[in-house]
Image (tube, rainbow, N blue to C red):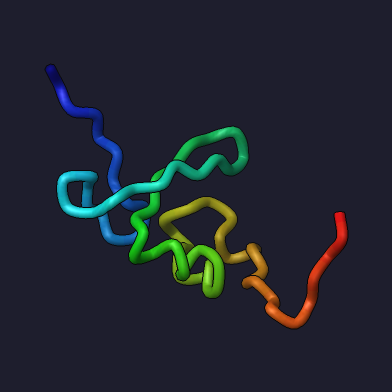
Length: 68
């Protein structure tokens, strides 16, 4: 059985090293590890060059809560 190449978009580790979460964005699936999920949430610009359009993603704003 061949292993699939899922790797964290930020650090490149696979699921033998860390838990990975699948994220769907712009019709594609990418993987991010549990350690770097906060990067996606709070500082997505760090993923620029690794995730298309990441430089335009706003960080989470804990002071603002949109209702739908």
